[in-house]
Amino acid sequence: MPIAVNRLTGVIRAHGEVLKQKSISTKLKNNESDLNQTSLSVLSSTGLRLYSISGQDKVEEIFAKDNTEQIRITERLFNSSLVVLVTAQKPNCLKMLHFKKKQDICNCFYPSDILCVRMNRQRLIVCLAESIHIHDIRDMKILHSIDNIAPNEQGLCALSLNSLLAFPICQTSGELRIFNASKLRTGITIKAHATPLSALTFSTSGTLLATASERGTVIRVFCVKNGQRVQEFRRGVSCVRIASLVFATSGDFLCASSNTETVHIFKIDAQAVETVELKAIAEVAAKSDEASKEAAPAPSAEEANSTAAPAASWGGMFSKAVSSLLLPSQVTDVLAQDRSFATVQLAQAGLKHICALTRVQKELRLLIACEDGFLYVHDFNAERGGSCKLLAVHDLRGALEDVIELQLSESVLRSQIKTSSTIPAQPSSLNMLKSCAASVLIENPDPMPDNSYASILRGEQADAMSDSAKFRKLCDAIDTPTKLYDERQFPPVAIAAKD
Image (tube, rainbow, N blue to C red; front, side):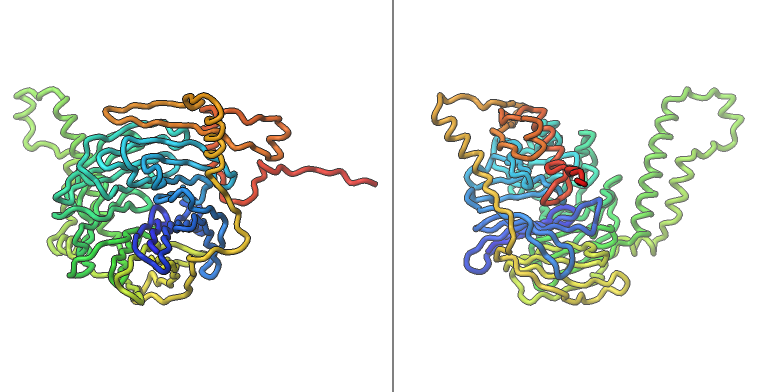
């Protein structure tokens, strides 16, 4: 039963074999605006299910869909209604849907197979083997394509909440590049490891980047402003495959799991982070000061002789002040390999586990999803650390009661029947967007009839979805909170009482 789990503020994944040849892919999500609302998506050979985790003993299923299309990648935008799917039947097609309203939004086709999808409130990133495509998530227009990158067969990339994108640029070493997907600007290059990368993750604030190599023995944390290494953690001496690497929602801790029986939680040194950020500010000030000196006219000979000693610039003074704080012993402490702050001993080694460290009912909890189909909830003491106590276990292999069933293939089947009875023609709304050598095809499928109360009052008809309609549906799926019923669909009706 292979399972893949996504991070709470980002993504948690894993793959493997589980009981009864049932494939499960689970994703834990946490809304950045409400850290007490945690969701879980489970993809198995039998179907796709979405859960809401409101407490350590309360996991409710809110959505279910049969896996008739052989879904292999699923991604949900935090706790919103927007879900994207990639199927084995069409591995180069990205399907976007509003699962609460049972509506397909659009389909995007790419030159090769889709390996990874990342989303936040502004951007949607699609990673292929040799290119990365950046979309505006509110209208799915392609803004930029990063072509001719080093072959990335794992689809390894990370997206922060402030739209910083990190991806490897070398097959033989752990060198990576940071790209600003919001401003569409290339950032710094970081030589993180000597061997190829296996895991990348941003902190919630987007100021730190954690990396792990294929060896899995050392985990490093870098400052994204200047690429300087902040901390280095020693996971162990044996080479393992890192399955999950994720920051806590507060950014104070970093959790790592592998195919061993131990999950490690490392503590981020706030003083080391502050020192590196001050140094980054000093470097920017020094560069700006040098640029102003170059732009200023050269002083005359009299002015040069009259000045006994050149006045120190503000940037230089600030840089020296920060450098004076870095004593040799402190530098050694910053660059030393720290050990884990807390650990979890799992029952069985060899299975892949995906972790998330977040608050559930205002209490800090460690969530671990295993490829055996179970979700484990552990206590975590942020003051003392140590061994984490197991609090609850949830079985994700079976379906629960009171589930909303949804067949997303109905609109596709309807469109196929419609086109088979007529002359083959191009889709009603079709946009071809080209960037460099790569092309992305965005197709707007025929919409599902809207039988909501508001739609009946407006008298809308099911026509081909226009770009403006797609924009409204995307915005609605992104902004609408996760609820089974929406006041906009079922507006309140005032009834006057009779005497």
